[in-house]
Structures are given as C-alpha cells and as structure tokens.
Amino acid sequence: DGAAWHDRIREGLETAGAVPHGFPTGEGLRLATGTWPKTGAETAPAAPGIETVLDPLFAAHAPAHDTAATTLRPSDLGGASALPGEAGLDEDAAKRRGTQIHRLLEILPPLPAADRANAARTLLAHGPDAATEDEIALLLAEAEKVLSKPSLAPIFTADALAEVPVSAPLDALGGRRIHGVIDRLIVTPDRVTAIDFKTNAVLPERPEDTPEGLLRQMGAYAHALAAIYPGREIETALLWTRTATLMPLPHALVSAALLRAGQLDAAGAAT
Image (cartoon, rainbow, N blue to C red):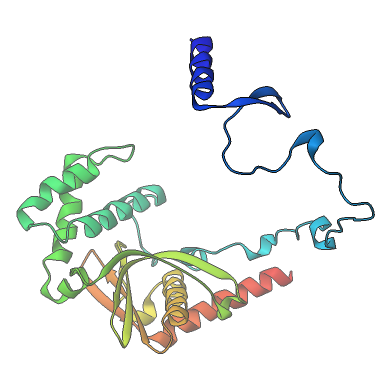
C-alpha cells in the first residue's frame, strides 16, 4: 500500500545517511554530497538597489495571425479538373475511385505480378470505402495496364520517389505557399520530373486541351520544384490511367495556367 511504499523509501534514505531537512513543502530527508547552496531562511537577501528590468519585447503581444496567408493545395487553385462529357460516377465516387487507383499504383509496382491480385484485395477490400470484388477486378485491371506498359516502366523503378510532399512559396501566387503531394518524382543531377496520376474518363487529345485546374496544379508543382532544385530542368507530365498514356506538359503551358490562378487570387483579394 501507499504507507508501506513511503516507509520503504524513508528507511532506504536513512540507511544511506540522509538527514532531516526543511523544504518549502515541509520537513523531509535529504541525501547530499558535496557543497550545496543555502536554502530558505538561510539564503542571503538580495542586494538593495538591484532591479531586474525586462526588455519590452517580453510584454508585447504576439502579432495577429494572417489568415490570408493560408497554405494552398495545388488542386485548389481553381479551374475545371475534368473535360465536358465526363459522366458516370458522381464526384464522391470518382474521388474514391481515384484514391483507390493511386493506392494500387503506389503499392503494387515492386511486387511480382503473380502477387498483385491478392495485394489489391488486401488494400481495397477493407475499411469504410471497401471495394467489392467486381470493383477490385476493374481497378486492378486499370493499374495492371499502366504497370505492364514498357514505356512507363521508368516511372515505377526503385529510383522513382512515390507520394512526395512538396511545399514552397510561389511568386506567381503573390508569395503564398502551396503544399501538395506529387505521385511520382524522378530526380537526376540535371533534371527533375513530376508525374501526377489522373483517372479521368474523358481525356484530352493534346496538352493544350487539358482541363485548366490540372494545368494550374502542375504549374504549382513545377514552380515549387524550381525553387527547391535551382539550376535543374523541371518537367511535368500527367499519366492518364484509363489509357496508360503519359502526357508531358510544356513548361510555358503550365506556367501560364499558374499565372492565371495568381491573377484571379489577387483580384479576389482586392475586392
């Protein structure tokens, strides 16, 4: 019990040579070696005439938080994220499907082809957004189409980084900071390539036809990476999973889209 525990501590201290001592909270035992400073009433009074003066900084209030400087997500820079004619799934279902495809393309690449079906079931058949067997078969088929295409193999090697967080302030957005996650990042001594996976059903025929919101997103990644990797060539591309097609995006195209996002943001702030 509590009393027995306290008695054992007291007996141990006394055996070790502890002596009675007055503490601010009451009488107790102190085991001391060496020279200790005096305490309590034995402490010498402070010298008269000495006053501690704090810098005014310690009395100042912290500056108000600038709510206008909220970090932006590259996917929230405005503009459409799909082409006209995109139909079938509602927005929530489309996002769920996109998340599931992204999960497969993140986890399956290093696995032997024979093990991927079981891994897909393990990944997708549980949790609040669990997929049915039929859904898993369709999702796996789309992921396998991407992973089995020889021209896309360099994207899924061990040298490619997966799900890479990136954050940087962007001049094109008036210095506001963006923070996002790049699906695949390939970094070499002279070049950095950012690739984002898109599961849209209606696909553009040319980079110029890409939905504005996706161009702004990739422009944000391009400018953030240019700040993080100065002196290296920055490339961006979209991987359309429906057709297993990699679409490189011209730097001027995504930069112009990012600039449009910045102009709209500035106009909104002005009003």
